[in-house]
Image (cartoon, rainbow, N blue to C red; front, side, top):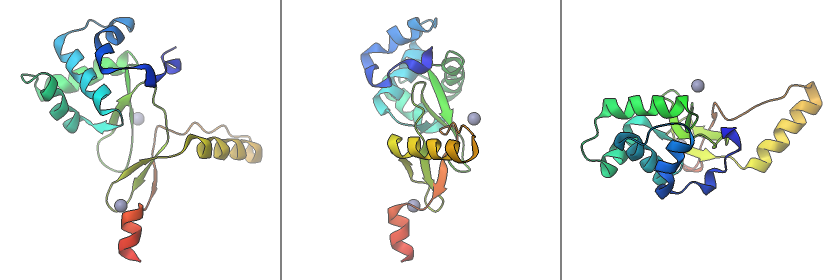
Length: 150
Ligand SMILES: [Zn+2]
Ligand SMILES: [Zn+2]
């Protein structure tokens, strides 16, 4: 049900409504964390999200942010993605795009949905396996790092 929600339709001002729509009380920390994530948009690690949540609600504690991420995750409002060896990244629940992570500098890029779709279709045609990419990032070398080694 949540997967069908268009993330593009979620605005920062909608944080309280999104919480209530998912059966979640709109407490100040939850609103602050969700507003910070909506404002940021893309995948983000919990430490950085804590810094952004502090902009929304200066008294929020890191432990509260981590607990809040857990609550929002249980409700499907946020999900996570693994990109490289570090901690997983938090992102909005409807965002299932496939990421690429640079093995040298950790830079992250969102891969074009069309390219991923073509890849999934070709794999299915070849070996009848239905890939569901998005939970783990692919690894590679970003343009900047490729330039250094050339
Ligand atoms: Zn996971
Ligand atoms: Zn790089």
